[in-house]
Image (cartoon, rainbow, N blue to C red; front, side, top):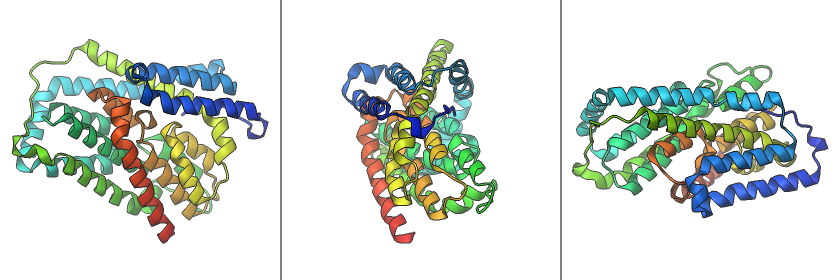
Length: 357
Protein backbone atom coordinates (compact mmCIF):
# COMPACT_ATOMS: atom_id res chain seq x y z
CA UNK A 1 0.00 0.00 0.00
CA UNK A 2 1.18 3.50 -0.82
CA UNK A 3 1.35 6.24 1.77
CA UNK A 4 2.16 9.90 1.26
CA UNK A 5 4.20 11.79 3.77
CA UNK A 6 1.62 13.89 5.60
CA UNK A 7 1.92 16.21 8.57
CA UNK A 8 -1.43 16.20 10.32
CA UNK A 9 -0.98 19.52 12.09
CA UNK A 10 -0.20 21.32 8.84
CA UNK A 11 -3.36 20.24 7.03
CA UNK A 12 -5.47 23.41 6.53
CA UNK A 13 -9.18 23.24 7.20
CA UNK A 14 -10.01 24.03 3.59
CA UNK A 15 -8.14 20.95 2.38
CA UNK A 16 -10.19 18.78 4.72
CA UNK A 17 -13.33 20.54 3.49
CA UNK A 18 -12.46 19.83 -0.14
CA UNK A 19 -11.63 16.23 0.69
CA UNK A 20 -15.01 15.99 2.42
CA UNK A 21 -16.63 17.01 -0.87
CA UNK A 22 -14.60 14.30 -2.61
CA UNK A 23 -15.92 11.74 -0.11
CA UNK A 24 -19.50 12.88 -0.72
CA UNK A 25 -19.08 12.46 -4.48
CA UNK A 26 -17.47 9.08 -3.97
CA UNK A 27 -20.46 7.86 -1.98
CA UNK A 28 -23.26 9.41 -4.06
CA UNK A 29 -22.40 9.10 -7.75
CA UNK A 30 -21.83 5.32 -8.01
CA UNK A 31 -25.32 4.80 -6.57
CA UNK A 32 -27.15 7.48 -8.57
CA UNK A 33 -25.51 7.71 -12.00
CA UNK A 34 -25.82 4.93 -14.56
CA UNK A 35 -22.75 6.21 -16.42
CA UNK A 36 -20.64 6.08 -13.27
CA UNK A 37 -22.05 2.65 -12.43
CA UNK A 38 -21.01 1.37 -15.87
CA UNK A 39 -17.58 3.05 -15.81
CA UNK A 40 -16.79 2.79 -12.10
CA UNK A 41 -13.05 2.26 -12.50
CA UNK A 42 -12.70 5.45 -14.59
CA UNK A 43 -14.75 7.43 -12.07
CA UNK A 44 -12.65 6.13 -9.18
CA UNK A 45 -9.44 7.06 -11.00
CA UNK A 46 -10.78 10.60 -11.49
CA UNK A 47 -11.84 10.86 -7.83
CA UNK A 48 -8.49 9.48 -6.67
CA UNK A 49 -6.55 11.90 -8.84
CA UNK A 50 -8.63 14.79 -7.49
CA UNK A 51 -8.00 13.70 -3.88
CA UNK A 52 -4.23 13.42 -4.41
CA UNK A 53 -4.18 16.81 -6.14
CA UNK A 54 -6.03 18.46 -3.24
CA UNK A 55 -3.69 16.79 -0.74
CA UNK A 56 -0.62 17.83 -2.72
CA UNK A 57 0.68 14.30 -2.95
CA UNK A 58 1.92 14.04 -6.53
CA UNK A 59 5.55 13.08 -7.10
CA UNK A 60 7.48 10.93 -9.55
CA UNK A 61 7.99 8.21 -6.93
CA UNK A 62 4.32 8.27 -5.97
CA UNK A 63 3.21 7.89 -9.61
CA UNK A 64 5.64 5.00 -10.14
CA UNK A 65 4.44 3.19 -7.01
CA UNK A 66 0.80 3.77 -7.96
CA UNK A 67 1.40 2.18 -11.36
CA UNK A 68 3.41 -0.68 -9.89
CA UNK A 69 1.23 -1.65 -6.92
CA UNK A 70 -1.70 -3.26 -8.85
CA UNK A 71 0.60 -5.43 -10.98
CA UNK A 72 0.64 -8.41 -8.59
CA UNK A 73 -3.14 -8.45 -8.21
CA UNK A 74 -3.69 -8.13 -11.97
CA UNK A 75 -1.17 -10.90 -12.63
CA UNK A 76 -2.93 -13.28 -10.22
CA UNK A 77 -6.29 -12.49 -11.84
CA UNK A 78 -4.92 -13.20 -15.32
CA UNK A 79 -3.15 -16.44 -14.35
CA UNK A 80 -6.14 -17.86 -12.45
CA UNK A 81 -8.47 -16.87 -15.32
CA UNK A 82 -6.25 -18.68 -17.84
CA UNK A 83 -6.11 -21.79 -15.63
CA UNK A 84 -9.88 -21.89 -15.19
CA UNK A 85 -10.41 -21.22 -18.89
CA UNK A 86 -8.11 -24.00 -20.09
CA UNK A 87 -8.96 -26.61 -17.46
CA UNK A 88 -12.56 -25.72 -16.68
CA UNK A 89 -13.93 -29.08 -17.85
CA UNK A 90 -11.83 -30.99 -15.32
CA UNK A 91 -12.23 -28.45 -12.49
CA UNK A 92 -15.99 -28.22 -12.79
CA UNK A 93 -16.54 -31.95 -13.16
CA UNK A 94 -15.08 -32.25 -9.67
CA UNK A 95 -17.28 -29.38 -8.45
CA UNK A 96 -20.32 -30.90 -10.13
CA UNK A 97 -19.75 -34.17 -8.26
CA UNK A 98 -19.46 -32.18 -5.02
CA UNK A 99 -22.69 -30.26 -5.65
CA UNK A 100 -24.58 -33.44 -6.54
CA UNK A 101 -23.76 -35.04 -3.19
CA UNK A 102 -25.19 -32.14 -1.18
CA UNK A 103 -28.30 -30.05 -1.59
CA UNK A 104 -27.51 -26.61 -3.10
CA UNK A 105 -27.96 -24.68 0.14
CA UNK A 106 -25.47 -26.91 1.95
CA UNK A 107 -23.05 -26.85 -0.98
CA UNK A 108 -22.94 -23.07 -1.08
CA UNK A 109 -22.81 -22.73 2.68
CA UNK A 110 -19.79 -25.05 2.80
CA UNK A 111 -18.12 -23.32 -0.17
CA UNK A 112 -18.47 -19.86 1.38
CA UNK A 113 -17.27 -21.09 4.77
CA UNK A 114 -14.17 -22.70 3.25
CA UNK A 115 -13.37 -19.60 1.19
CA UNK A 116 -13.77 -17.38 4.24
CA UNK A 117 -11.68 -19.50 6.58
CA UNK A 118 -8.90 -20.14 4.04
CA UNK A 119 -8.77 -16.65 2.47
CA UNK A 120 -6.02 -15.67 4.90
CA UNK A 121 -3.82 -18.38 3.37
CA UNK A 122 -4.73 -18.50 -0.34
CA UNK A 123 -5.16 -14.69 -0.77
CA UNK A 124 -8.42 -12.80 -1.13
CA UNK A 125 -7.94 -12.47 -4.90
CA UNK A 126 -7.81 -16.22 -5.48
CA UNK A 127 -10.74 -16.82 -3.11
CA UNK A 128 -12.89 -14.25 -4.93
CA UNK A 129 -11.97 -15.68 -8.34
CA UNK A 130 -12.85 -19.23 -7.27
CA UNK A 131 -16.21 -17.96 -6.00
CA UNK A 132 -16.92 -16.08 -9.24
CA UNK A 133 -15.91 -19.00 -11.47
CA UNK A 134 -18.23 -21.36 -9.59
CA UNK A 135 -21.16 -18.94 -9.73
CA UNK A 136 -20.65 -18.42 -13.47
CA UNK A 137 -21.38 -22.07 -14.22
CA UNK A 138 -24.14 -22.62 -11.66
CA UNK A 139 -27.65 -22.00 -12.89
CA UNK A 140 -29.02 -19.69 -10.19
CA UNK A 141 -31.35 -16.72 -10.35
CA UNK A 142 -29.55 -13.40 -10.66
CA UNK A 143 -30.74 -12.21 -7.24
CA UNK A 144 -29.41 -15.37 -5.59
CA UNK A 145 -26.06 -14.99 -7.35
CA UNK A 146 -25.70 -11.41 -6.11
CA UNK A 147 -26.63 -12.30 -2.53
CA UNK A 148 -24.24 -15.26 -2.41
CA UNK A 149 -21.45 -13.11 -3.85
CA UNK A 150 -21.97 -10.36 -1.29
CA UNK A 151 -22.14 -12.75 1.67
CA UNK A 152 -19.07 -14.61 0.43
CA UNK A 153 -17.05 -11.41 -0.03
CA UNK A 154 -17.89 -10.36 3.51
CA UNK A 155 -16.69 -13.77 4.71
CA UNK A 156 -13.51 -13.55 2.62
CA UNK A 157 -12.76 -10.05 3.88
CA UNK A 158 -13.24 -11.10 7.50
CA UNK A 159 -11.21 -14.28 7.17
CA UNK A 160 -8.32 -12.45 5.52
CA UNK A 161 -7.30 -10.75 8.77
CA UNK A 162 -6.42 -14.04 10.47
CA UNK A 163 -2.84 -14.13 9.13
CA UNK A 164 -0.37 -11.55 7.77
CA UNK A 165 -0.35 -13.32 4.38
CA UNK A 166 -3.61 -12.52 2.61
CA UNK A 167 -3.68 -8.73 2.45
CA UNK A 168 -1.79 -5.67 3.76
CA UNK A 169 -4.16 -5.14 6.72
CA UNK A 170 -2.95 -8.21 8.61
CA UNK A 171 0.68 -7.53 7.73
CA UNK A 172 0.54 -3.92 8.97
CA UNK A 173 -1.08 -4.94 12.27
CA UNK A 174 1.39 -7.76 12.82
CA UNK A 175 4.44 -5.62 12.04
CA UNK A 176 3.27 -2.78 14.29
CA UNK A 177 2.84 -5.08 17.29
CA UNK A 178 6.00 -7.21 17.13
CA UNK A 179 7.47 -5.44 20.17
CA UNK A 180 6.23 -4.92 23.73
CA UNK A 181 3.60 -5.31 25.05
CA UNK A 182 2.07 -7.61 22.39
CA UNK A 183 5.12 -9.39 20.89
CA UNK A 184 3.05 -10.43 17.88
CA UNK A 185 4.18 -13.51 15.95
CA UNK A 186 2.70 -15.15 12.84
CA UNK A 187 -0.19 -16.66 14.82
CA UNK A 188 -0.98 -13.53 16.85
CA UNK A 189 -4.00 -12.56 14.74
CA UNK A 190 -5.30 -16.12 14.65
CA UNK A 191 -5.07 -16.49 18.43
CA UNK A 192 -6.84 -13.24 19.24
CA UNK A 193 -9.37 -12.88 16.41
CA UNK A 194 -10.46 -16.36 15.34
CA UNK A 195 -13.07 -16.44 18.11
CA UNK A 196 -14.50 -13.14 16.80
CA UNK A 197 -14.24 -13.87 13.07
CA UNK A 198 -15.28 -17.53 12.75
CA UNK A 199 -18.88 -17.11 14.04
CA UNK A 200 -19.52 -14.28 11.56
CA UNK A 201 -18.13 -16.37 8.70
CA UNK A 202 -20.40 -19.22 9.80
CA UNK A 203 -23.47 -16.94 9.82
CA UNK A 204 -22.58 -15.47 6.41
CA UNK A 205 -22.13 -19.00 5.06
CA UNK A 206 -25.58 -19.92 6.35
CA UNK A 207 -27.01 -16.81 4.69
CA UNK A 208 -25.36 -17.78 1.40
CA UNK A 209 -26.79 -21.28 1.66
CA UNK A 210 -30.24 -19.89 2.45
CA UNK A 211 -30.00 -17.74 -0.69
CA UNK A 212 -29.61 -20.91 -2.78
CA UNK A 213 -32.53 -22.73 -1.16
CA UNK A 214 -34.92 -22.14 -4.11
CA UNK A 215 -32.53 -23.80 -6.54
CA UNK A 216 -33.60 -27.15 -5.14
CA UNK A 217 -32.96 -30.20 -7.27
CA UNK A 218 -33.37 -28.21 -10.51
CA UNK A 219 -30.00 -26.52 -10.09
CA UNK A 220 -27.62 -27.39 -12.89
CA UNK A 221 -23.96 -26.75 -13.57
CA UNK A 222 -23.02 -25.98 -17.15
CA UNK A 223 -19.60 -27.29 -18.15
CA UNK A 224 -18.29 -24.66 -20.52
CA UNK A 225 -17.53 -25.97 -23.99
CA UNK A 226 -16.57 -22.56 -25.37
CA UNK A 227 -13.43 -20.89 -24.11
CA UNK A 228 -13.22 -17.27 -23.11
CA UNK A 229 -11.02 -15.26 -25.46
CA UNK A 230 -7.69 -13.96 -24.26
CA UNK A 231 -8.86 -10.49 -25.26
CA UNK A 232 -11.76 -10.76 -22.83
CA UNK A 233 -9.48 -11.96 -20.03
CA UNK A 234 -7.02 -9.14 -20.70
CA UNK A 235 -9.82 -6.55 -20.64
CA UNK A 236 -11.05 -7.82 -17.28
CA UNK A 237 -7.49 -7.84 -15.94
CA UNK A 238 -7.04 -4.24 -17.14
CA UNK A 239 -10.27 -3.16 -15.45
CA UNK A 240 -9.15 -4.71 -12.14
CA UNK A 241 -5.72 -3.08 -12.52
CA UNK A 242 -7.44 0.31 -12.87
CA UNK A 243 -9.67 -0.42 -9.86
CA UNK A 244 -6.71 -1.23 -7.62
CA UNK A 245 -4.70 1.76 -8.84
CA UNK A 246 -7.72 3.99 -8.20
CA UNK A 247 -8.15 2.65 -4.66
CA UNK A 248 -4.53 3.46 -3.92
CA UNK A 249 -5.00 7.00 -5.20
CA UNK A 250 -8.14 7.44 -3.09
CA UNK A 251 -6.52 6.05 0.05
CA UNK A 252 -3.43 8.22 -0.33
CA UNK A 253 -5.41 11.33 -1.22
CA UNK A 254 -7.86 11.01 1.67
CA UNK A 255 -5.24 10.12 4.25
CA UNK A 256 -4.91 13.71 5.60
CA UNK A 257 -8.67 13.80 6.21
CA UNK A 258 -8.56 10.44 8.00
CA UNK A 259 -5.62 11.55 10.13
CA UNK A 260 -7.40 14.74 11.10
CA UNK A 261 -10.67 13.09 12.07
CA UNK A 262 -10.17 9.55 13.43
CA UNK A 263 -6.71 9.47 15.01
CA UNK A 264 -6.66 8.85 18.80
CA UNK A 265 -10.33 7.87 19.01
CA UNK A 266 -11.33 5.37 21.68
CA UNK A 267 -12.21 1.78 20.81
CA UNK A 268 -16.00 2.06 20.53
CA UNK A 269 -15.90 5.32 18.57
CA UNK A 270 -13.07 3.97 16.43
CA UNK A 271 -15.19 0.93 15.58
CA UNK A 272 -17.95 3.18 14.22
CA UNK A 273 -15.52 5.58 12.56
CA UNK A 274 -13.98 2.69 10.64
CA UNK A 275 -17.12 2.61 8.52
CA UNK A 276 -15.07 4.90 6.26
CA UNK A 277 -13.24 1.72 5.16
CA UNK A 278 -15.96 1.47 2.51
CA UNK A 279 -14.06 4.21 0.67
CA UNK A 280 -10.57 4.27 2.23
CA UNK A 281 -8.47 1.11 2.08
CA UNK A 282 -8.50 -0.61 5.46
CA UNK A 283 -4.71 -1.05 5.45
CA UNK A 284 -4.33 2.73 5.15
CA UNK A 285 -6.64 3.23 8.12
CA UNK A 286 -4.78 0.59 10.13
CA UNK A 287 -1.47 2.34 9.49
CA UNK A 288 -3.00 5.60 10.75
CA UNK A 289 -4.75 4.15 13.82
CA UNK A 290 -2.48 1.50 15.25
CA UNK A 291 0.30 2.18 17.75
CA UNK A 292 2.48 -0.45 19.48
CA UNK A 293 0.95 0.33 22.89
CA UNK A 294 -2.69 -0.05 21.80
CA UNK A 295 -4.75 -2.00 24.32
CA UNK A 296 -6.12 -5.39 23.29
CA UNK A 297 -9.72 -4.19 23.66
CA UNK A 298 -9.13 -1.18 21.41
CA UNK A 299 -7.28 -3.41 18.94
CA UNK A 300 -10.26 -5.76 18.74
CA UNK A 301 -12.65 -2.86 18.13
CA UNK A 302 -10.32 -1.45 15.47
CA UNK A 303 -9.67 -4.68 13.54
CA UNK A 304 -13.27 -5.91 13.60
CA UNK A 305 -14.47 -2.51 12.41
CA UNK A 306 -11.98 -2.45 9.55
CA UNK A 307 -12.76 -6.02 8.49
CA UNK A 308 -16.55 -5.85 8.82
CA UNK A 309 -17.33 -2.65 6.92
CA UNK A 310 -15.24 -3.07 3.77
CA UNK A 311 -17.76 -4.96 1.63
CA UNK A 312 -20.64 -2.47 1.88
CA UNK A 313 -19.71 -0.93 -1.49
CA UNK A 314 -18.02 -2.54 -4.50
CA UNK A 315 -14.99 -0.28 -4.19
CA UNK A 316 -14.57 -1.03 -0.48
CA UNK A 317 -12.54 -4.21 -0.72
CA UNK A 318 -10.48 -6.16 -3.24
CA UNK A 319 -12.62 -9.35 -3.24
CA UNK A 320 -15.68 -7.23 -4.07
CA UNK A 321 -13.95 -5.71 -7.08
CA UNK A 322 -12.69 -9.03 -8.42
CA UNK A 323 -16.01 -10.88 -7.99
CA UNK A 324 -18.21 -8.00 -9.19
CA UNK A 325 -16.08 -7.48 -12.29
CA UNK A 326 -16.11 -11.19 -13.12
CA UNK A 327 -19.88 -11.53 -12.61
CA UNK A 328 -20.92 -8.13 -13.97
CA UNK A 329 -22.50 -6.94 -10.71
CA UNK A 330 -23.20 -3.19 -10.72
CA UNK A 331 -22.76 -0.76 -7.83
CA UNK A 332 -26.44 -0.33 -6.97
CA UNK A 333 -27.10 -4.04 -7.33
CA UNK A 334 -24.26 -4.71 -4.89
CA UNK A 335 -25.23 -2.00 -2.40
CA UNK A 336 -28.86 -3.15 -2.24
CA UNK A 337 -27.67 -6.33 -0.50
CA UNK A 338 -24.34 -5.30 0.99
CA UNK A 339 -25.41 -2.14 2.84
CA UNK A 340 -28.15 -3.82 4.92
CA UNK A 341 -25.81 -6.75 5.55
CA UNK A 342 -23.10 -4.35 6.70
CA UNK A 343 -25.43 -2.61 9.13
CA UNK A 344 -26.54 -5.95 10.58
CA UNK A 345 -22.90 -7.00 11.02
CA UNK A 346 -22.04 -3.62 12.50
CA UNK A 347 -24.91 -3.72 14.98
CA UNK A 348 -24.33 -7.32 15.97
CA UNK A 349 -20.61 -6.90 16.47
CA UNK A 350 -21.01 -3.63 18.37
CA UNK A 351 -23.51 -5.12 20.82
CA UNK A 352 -21.42 -8.25 21.41
CA UNK A 353 -18.19 -6.30 21.81
CA UNK A 354 -19.88 -3.83 24.16
CA UNK A 355 -21.12 -6.67 26.38
CA UNK A 356 -17.99 -8.84 26.32
CA UNK A 357 -15.29 -6.16 26.43
